[in-house]
Length: 173
Image 1 (cartoon, rainbow, N blue to C red):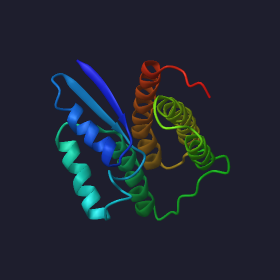
Image 2: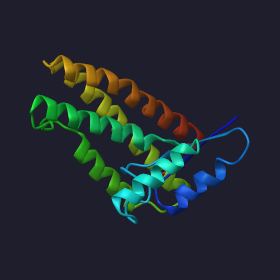
Image 3: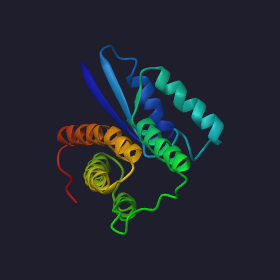
Image 4: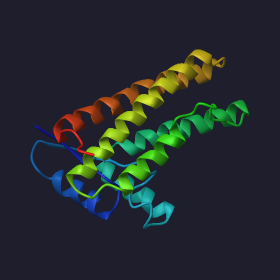
């Protein structure tokens, strides 16, 4: 059994995942922050079809779980007739900006992979803390239930990222 993580959602990463998934006993996870694979290259409908195509071929897509959680939150907000607002202490935007800056200044290759996964670990820890705090403060039983559903998914992604980090080693920058 081989656990393989491919980072990215563009042409090269998607094709690498497809090729690697053909090896016997290979379990491939494609790590991508966007809503769909090839999201910058294709229109939304085609990118959604391509993403489904890869998922149907047993390539695990962590991005689909992120998207499913966002969709569930948006649907709940619509049902409750509220406009979601991030808390004043929301770490997501500054973390995303910091990750972008760190990745833009890191050369491609193994060091880029290490920096990326360390940034993802930091982000998932912060989001898990945010979810814990939001759960404690939430008054809506539906919102509490959604957060309870989200926490194990976030924790699973954190665990997977930490496992990948262990396989990659420490970043040098």
